[in-house]
Structures are given as C-alpha cells and as structure tokens.
Image (tube, rainbow, N blue to C red; front, top):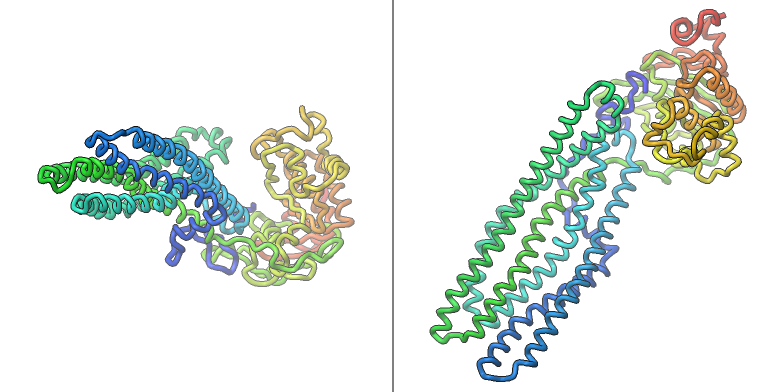
Length: 604
C-alpha cells in the first residue's frame, strides 16, 4: 500500500462510521449461560441422555448406604447376608457401567458444543469487515477461536451438567440424610453453610483471574504471529533474541495469570474437601454421643457417615461447576467481543445483472480510514468507460490503491459515490460485486497449499482447459514444467517456495481464471523481468479488448499503453488523458515521467 494510504491504519472503521475499537466488554451483553445454551441447543438429546445416566449412577450410589445399614442389621441379628451382598454387588456394577457410558455421552456432546462454537466463530471471523480486522491482532483472534472455545468443553460438562447432576445428587443426599437422622443433618448443614459463604467470596476472583489469563494467551498469540509473519525480516535484522524475549514475556504473563486463576480454583476445591472432613469428624463426635445415649443405633450412624462421605462427590461437582463457570464465562465474554465486530452482509443488496465489461465512476468521493484519521481522498471524480485500460499514476500516498479498495468495497466512501455499472456499490450484493471483479493485490499473496489450489482459489469450478490457458498467458508454463510435482507442488507458507515474480504471475493467472468483467491490477508486474513483463503486458492488452482494466503502475511500458491515464496527487485527480496529451499539458505528469518511470529518451 502506498504511504499515507495504508489499509492497516489504526482506528480504521467503516468510513463515515464510528472508528472501530478494540473489542471489550459492554453493558447489556447476554449472560454467559444464555450464550452457552445457544451452543448447547443442537446437542440437547445427547446431553440429556448423558445427564439421565449420570443421575441413575448417583441414585445407585445413594442406595448403597441403606444397603450397608441393612447388612449391619442382618449381621447383628444373625440373618443371612447373601441376598444383601448380591444386591450391593449389583449396585456397584450398575454404578460403574452407567457412569462410564454416561461420561462418554457427555464428553462427546461437549466436544460437539466446542465444534459448534468454533464453526460459528470462524464463520463470523471470515465475514469481518476489513476495517475491523485492521484494528485487531490476528494472533488474538486466533486464540479466541481456538483456546477460548476449548474451554466450553469443560464448561459444558463441569458447569452445565455438573451443576445439574451434582446439585440434584446433593439435594437427594441431604434428603436421605434427613431421613436417617435430622439432628446429624443439621450439624452437617451448618458446616456446609460456612464453607459456602467463603467460596462465594472467592468466586469473583476466579472470574477476574480467568479473564486476565485468557487475555494474556491472546497477547502471546499476537506476539508470536507478529514474529512468524515477518520471520525473514526478524532474522535479517538480527532481532531473534529481542523478539524471543518479547514472546517469552507474553508467555510469562500468561503463566502468571493462569497460576493466579488456578490458585483461587484450588483454594475453593480444598475448602470444599476440608468442610467435608470437618463435617465427618463433627458427625462422628455428635453421632457417637447419640449412640451412647441410645438416641440412634450403630447402623444408623454408619449409614449417616457413609452419606457424609458420599456428599464429597456432589459437593466437589458443584464447586467445580461454579469455578469452571467463571473460567468459561471469561472465555465466552472474549468470544462475544469478537461477535460485536462489524461484518459484511452478503446477499442484502441487488444481484449482478450486468454482462460484458463494467463501468466505474467516482463522484466527488471523500474518504478517510477513521474519524481520527486525515482524509485520503478529497473529492475524487473520474469516469472509466467499458473496455480498455485505465492507468492510475501519481506520487506515493496519492490514494491510488485506495481507489481499488473502495471499488472492491473493502471500505465505504465517507461521502460521495462509487458506482459500478451506474449503481452505487453500497446497493450491490457484496458477493456479486466482487464476483464481477478480478483483483491482483500489490503484494500478490499466495496461500499455503498447492499451485493448483492457488490458481483455482477464485474460480474453483474452472476446467482444465481454462487452467492451462491461464498458465500459458501468465507465463507460468515454464515454472510448472520445472516443479517436481507440477501443479500439485506445495508452494509453502505464503508462497515462500516461489519468487516474487512467480507469485505475481500466480496472482494474475488466478484473477484471469475468474473471467472478470472488471480487472484491477495494483503494481501487478513490479517484480517481473522485462521479458515476462512485456508478455504479460500484451496479455493485459488482449484482456482489455473485452474487459475493463484498471491498473496502478509506474512503468512506462504499462502506463504509455493505457487508453487513458488518471493523474492523482494528495488524494485529488489532477488530470485525465493519454500519455502523449499529459506529457505535453500536465506539469505533474511530465515531472513524474521525467523522474519516476519514463526514460528521457522516450518523452517525445
């Protein structure tokens, strides 16, 4: 992008709108449980089935103390214990079998919830408006779609299901304890009440620490993505140690916040365990005294103590549910922050009803990347008729590349109108608008994958004949012949196995395969040698006979061959004409011709 017209300017919201801000919490957001319920809804049958089996497991466990009480009674009265032992064995086997299958169903459903969340969030991410992406860190967005969504697994099983099964089991256990001995139940409940108050104080701290831990993971991801995205520059600058230290500092911060969250979670869990031990000792003391006074018998005390021990599992479930809910709520909060970023609305405008080459018109267009940014365009006006090639020239920072961004509707004009085929681009369906355009970006990005996948990226349904023709006209046939696997050769991350000129030719072939009605070329031949540049110039000239072609270029060979030239400076159109007309009549163009891209011998 030219100086002064960067697409990564901070604060770049949709033009005319409030500038995009870093995502953050907002009053009135739905509570975390409601968001989680939305992800859970498609998987309710599996979750309900697993929950039912878990409750059956708990019910079989609750019966064991009563069977034990009966067993002690049979032993005391010298009755046969064979039937009681058989019943106890059956309950133990049923407990293990039902519990194992129920656990599998719940874990499978929880993984499905994570999958639903990831699909939803990644679909939203890929629809984000360019200004929204400009103001966020890609590494942080990646962390929200991966590590944050992973936390929903535990939130589903430990919080949603754990609270339901643990809570119901806890209530049922307390009812059974009251049936056995109300006095000992009151003693147990008193100990539990004190513990609940203390845990209630800890829970908000868990939420805050968990939120900070997830944020630090996002910052670490952003720091690492920053380095990997410019690894060659880092190495060439000898900055490995500095950047390693920066990533390590982010990792250390993530560790510190995660340990803090773990500390509060562990404290809550240990308090729950301690309360049960205190309750056991207290019940043993009080119950022993009641046995001594014949208020209850030994079998009743044993049964009650078994229930106290059995309480540890549901209380642990409830405490884990509360603590894990805080961790999951922090993750959901970060995911919802992404959902508040503006997205493109595909399918809301009018479809593309045109055929043949497109027309382009700018009417007094003013544009800036955000309310805090200076204007890039100051009343830009020009017409591009169908067919032919129009070149945009001017000093760096004139706003040439921004013209293409506005035509593609990566951004919206602050004022004025951008029209394609006589219709404002804001009235077009975004997918139809871009479907009519072939765009070769300035840095000609190539995606990780095979050469074939890259060539067919914009036109996946193109046939083999069309593919071979695109390879030929873009002068890639020699490259394909040299590669070990031809079109199936993997080109590496961001096309690192290709040269700059080869990546440009891939981008040009990709755009031509789409058979666009409007072709935008942003410095598309800047890294080509003279032979390939001349060949592709002839190809573009052929395309311009049936397609409208707009180019940003500095080379004489490209500019001089254009049917019309739009001269821009400081966000304004200074002149429009042919090469010969502008050299003779426009001082700015004549200066550019003499100093930037035209050899003096060719000025006549």
